[in-house]
Image 1 (cartoon, rainbow, N blue to C red):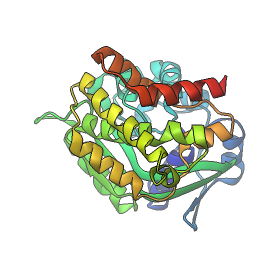
Image 2: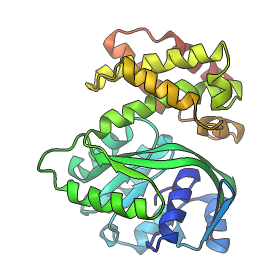
Image 3: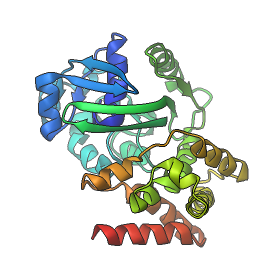
Image 4: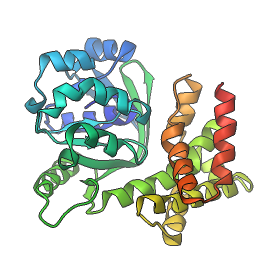
Length: 308
């Protein structure tokens, strides 16, 4: 598990409790706490405690061959993907181990594929989950915490990854992680970006949780507008989301738990924001298409200015 933070830490604890062998990566105080006291996850009051090997990325390279692992899961912030893939490139590129991304955004899988090739990349997304590090070595998570995964960029009829995906679906579901396999994971990644762009930047700007935003008479219009702009941007990747996707995603986030988004948590803790991976991804594609995106552009500009 590359990146045992709020999301990666929760899924790692679930898999470890089910008997799977895991190795975690982390850094700083969180890494030191994982080594000293193990990983503690508070999942809506259920406490999961697991003692798992934890290393920095340089230590991981020194200690293991990449093909020691059946699967490498990347749960990093998308802002770190390129730097970490460059750091691990020599370790990964001559191996055969598949790599599953469960990150925000639609640009992580292409970055991973640049290093290892498309045939080793599994796209994935964590659905209806909120999670963050509360103290070094401690994670809080909430929500249904599903995973959707699939062969990236799209499954072929004779795709050799189909068997592996079936194995993962069964193993994850048995571990208490509701998991489904999609034969068009790029479509699913864009559907999640519709939600992420709708609420993450605006929550970081206003300090409000998702339910407060989607039920506020003015802010809900901005959320909807940013989601609609994301639907339009999807056409640049030939995904072609439509009005039914927009309606479904807005309904989903409006009726979900009152989640403090990861971008709001990062802003409160003074950490880099995944703004370029979310709003930036939408704006770049809208510009390519010649489509206006005033809601996303405005919120992105205000949030960028507030960080400077």
